[in-house]
Image (cartoon, rainbow, N blue to C red; front, side):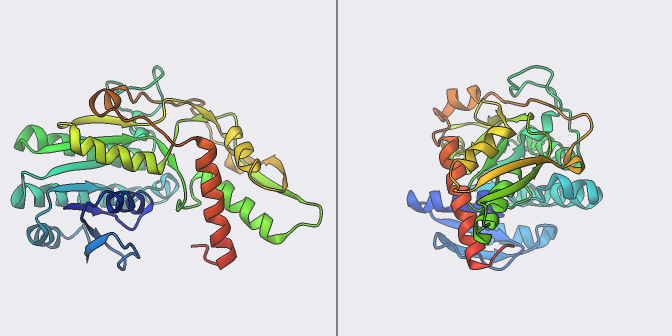
Length: 316
């Protein structure tokens, strides 16, 4: 049985669906109501900040494998409430690792970390030996979680993998992220049926290049890593840097509207890092994983998902 924290979130839902396809039993932990996921055999609604509750849940479930996805993941939110985001992400991770140490130390655990931890690249592509240099509170929290997870390997001999996932996108993603943000705006513009067949999309600097993977490829990487890898750190990324302008034009290719891009000065960032891309060579060497889903398919599926949300009037 595999236990997924944050199973109702973006990556969690896709990972649960993949497990169901492969006949893997899935249990979930989360703060919200039970998500509508047929793959779930059980779900416990708990606050991961409650150490006693987390330990009791682990003692009852006794999972063989654990994927820790639960986190406050918004960079923007982390600037607004740095203490809350750092405390929440670190405390929940510590409570889970400690519960596993005490109740099921033999469990294989994967902790979702972030490519944001590397900060401004000193060289490209960024591999796992690159120094960590977080540049926002969210990245700082993930760096702390990363180090914490590694310490449980060194101090207690637990099998813990740290997956540093770079940007991932796909159906089901919140519009606080660039691909989903554009997709929602296009879907809403289509629903409005403008008489001239045009829509304006506001952007920041579209020359910025980022490393994007499909979330379904990321879910597959997590499972493969847990099946084949020993403890260690693994980048989960495409290895390609895609300009944000290509994201917008790629979405536009799936829309009947003619899109006009306008720069919104409020969305421009000082000291922007213009290019980030990672290396997944270590993960590929150990597991054979490579990204399989073409970016065009990711963009189409994301746009279709937002069209369904807009049509249903469910935008949160």
